[in-house]
Image (spheres, rainbow, N blue to C red):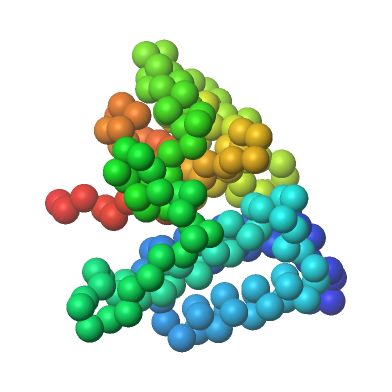
Length: 191
């Protein structure tokens, strides 16, 4: 019912769903209002917890997805750099949060590539608990549920993957659905 308290699992699932809706292109005032109300309700319920950042991550991704792309900075615009985000810059020149490299990223991606030698299995990752849309293990390049999010944790670091109905050449997954690094699916290829 509407009066029932929102649990952490429900909140994460709601954030993943709204993220998928926004990522699919529904970026209007109504979507912004739903997102704003949802985040305010989570804050009022005390669900944001730094020891379990899954809801914080999903909420911030949704906010980032709905904001308009501003393009590169111009000489007329103010530019600056967050010192807090400096740790996400990579020595490999990637430099953006979506392509952040952590110590175990290469190992996980290598495992995903190696999994393609065995091909798609009847079950490619643990099943989500009840009706959740988030899991914590995605060792295979293949996934089984489109729009499922995997938050792979290694120590204090975490990597996010989204299960998408597209082949992923980076992991050599040619039989979708496949995991994609980041909080959203790639744009559909032109037909």
